[in-house]
Length: 487
Image (tube, rainbow, N blue to C red; front, top):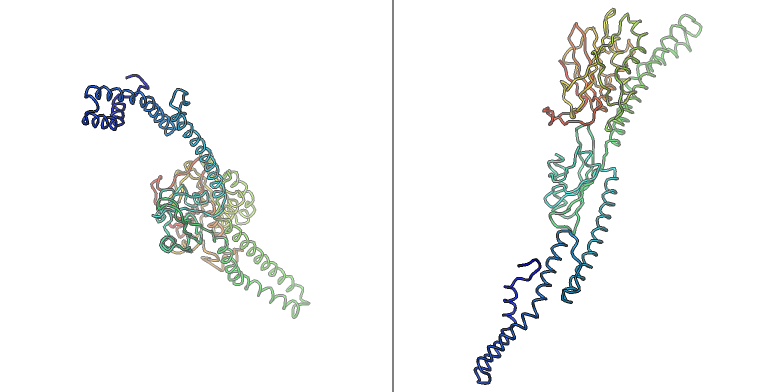
């Protein structure tokens, strides 16, 4: 059979079907004696040939129309209807072509609207999730992918966000058809507070979008509220002593010591010392508040850690000289890679750590600052950079710290020796600032100490690199940031 030929079997079947009425009439005529049997048979054959001749081009046209539709279904360009096709088939093919072009235009219009909608959703600052009737995520915007560290499409809501309150709200909205909300916190990579609003969408099949979940970040609002409360409580406590001292000396200078020049000079020196202490305390509190406000957004600049440390060490040389202590910067034959971070914040971290080492180390000893490039940290990190980590260790030869006190060192206003800390000008906020800056950098802080030998404070920062590995890829258990460990 040649290409494009109509199969014989469909022609014969259709011819026989259409010839049945004529055959019945001829049979009746023969039975009534009105027509001879031979002429009846000849008439039936002629009628069949005529019917076959009539339906053959139409069947061929239907076959061509079928191929025409198959081409459309496959997304190919169908052949142009030929004038030789039966008129009815040509009309059908032309109508199908018009319908196909109209449908294509509608598809393109719908695709453009969907693209615009996707752009609008991705531009929203709040994470947005769309769920089907089985609470599986079918779509998410850019903010949600950033929060969940990847595209959650196809995952169960309970697996993407392990938040029972939000899951209960979604089930309630699905069951009752009314909106629901839930307030919750996420602890990794840093503690963040959210309110989740769940709304039911009508008019969708169960395997399409049934719920929309909008997550609004309350972290900044709660942090601001907590910081205000902490500031009032802590500042009032820490400022009370120097302020009382100042008021006492002012009252004395206004009274009995108003004409006593030696006492006045001595009191003014003490007053200046206390005023400087209050100034440092206010500066540290403001610095801590500023860092906490930005803690949920990690910095991405590349910082030359060795160059930055040289600058910090040069600035602290006068203090080291006054303490009769030397400062040493050590690294391998090759300088370690740059770290991802904020240069000003990292300078504050290293300045605080080296300043503490100078204050609490023994006179005549050496404070060593060691920089090295490592593949992983001995403390948990939520993300392991492909380029590894930059470790900066500040080692002193002081009295050391008891093991049970190490976990509390980064608490605000916690001091191992409060009297000595105040005598040396400490505010009790230095290590709290270090902890929050390290957390802002998604790094880790390790504290090691031995009584009588000294302490080592090590900061682990992400080395600059093209890609990061999760702890699961690196074979480590997940954990939070800014971890303090003891040994």
